[in-house]
Amino acid sequence: MTAASKKQGNQLSEAEAIERAKLGDAEAFQVLYDLHRRRVYSLCLRMTTNTAEAEDLTQEAFLQLFRKIGTFRGESAFSTWLHRMAVNVVLMRLRKKGLQLVPLDETNETEEETQKKDFGAQDAVLAGSIDRLQLQNAIDRLPPGYRSIFVLHDVEGYEHNEIAEIVGCSIGNSKSQLHKARMKLRELLRTSRAEKAIKP
Amino acid sequence: MTCSEFHEILPDMLEHEAAGRHAAHLQSCSSCSSLVADLKAISEGARLLAEADEPSPRIWANIQRTLEAEGIIRAPQQEGGILFPRRRWSIFIWAAPVLAVFVLVAGFFLRAHNAGNISQPVSLVAQPGNIADNDEQQVLAALAPAIRANYEDNLKSVDAFIQDAKDSLAQNPDDDEARHFLMQAYEQKAMVYQLAMDRSAQ
Image 1 (cartoon, rainbow over the protein chains, first blue to last red):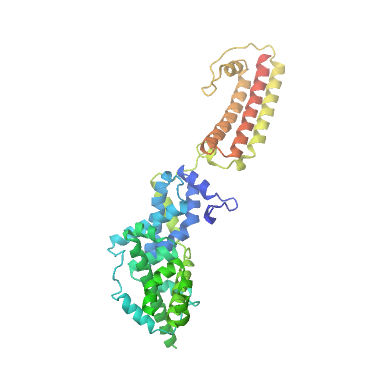
Image 2 (image 1 turned 120 degrees about the vertical axis):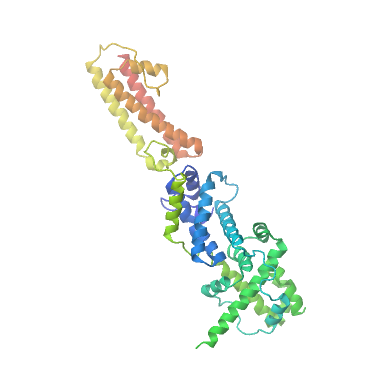
């Protein structure tokens, strides 16, 4: 049982809220929204890097969920179902905006070049000193395709086979893009740190 | 192993956390070992980012308004209506003693009238549609109008509780509270019925 599905105090449990929401109970909808709003909003925010758009997508994801809640039969966890729906809503929006979701060459930099750059970089080791804000800023600066796969895998915990299915790419492509995204993040974090060090 | 070769196997190594097999290279190459440490730190830091933010309260207000406009959220109904069986039975724990009081009051009422109307003739009259049983209809017909109205009210209340408990059990057969409540409601109905039987027989 997930933390979200446990009953807290007099609050409905997730399972009870689902059954009651199927019958149109207003309180049950709010319980489900309260249990999952942060995770859905965070996902939308990471993938779009825009608070207004993230809120809009959060609203859209929950509306889709509530419209279809009568079809939820419990084959998968409710949170998985909701999350998948939210991811699809976000990806649909990104596609409409014409953003490439399967990055092939977004950085205009070959892997070899990245590696060469890395070999020479002995300074500014990041390990153990990455703070939340720095990392968030770096993720926001990733190209959309890298960002989608990095967020889905490293932040949200999806497996490569799931990402391949959701995004519409091969498993190998997902693995390759994830690695490139991490490398790009490392570069962005180190650059950011170096810039900070120069400033008085 | 060269750094270039190490970089080729790095994604798989991180995926399967198989650094042990390449420990020799990592021990001898500070560049590659710091790269591995950084990538792991990035990945671990990313996990902590989930659920860090909160949407504005107006988002729920918008969702609620839309759901209401689409008829997906239904307005709350009176107790005993559609919403009743969906409630947790624990909050209706008061209902059992209330039903018992119903029975006692009904009994007292029946007996009080019994004392003054012993010779009242028995007559058959039309009965409410929700009372289907023929015996029950005869019992009702034998009661004086004032007593019968009181009896019918009590019976309707007990029947409503029984129906709610039945509906709840149909939706969730494992709901022990609802099952217990249903049994109690049936017992109360039997008592109400018995009192009416006693009265009509006199």
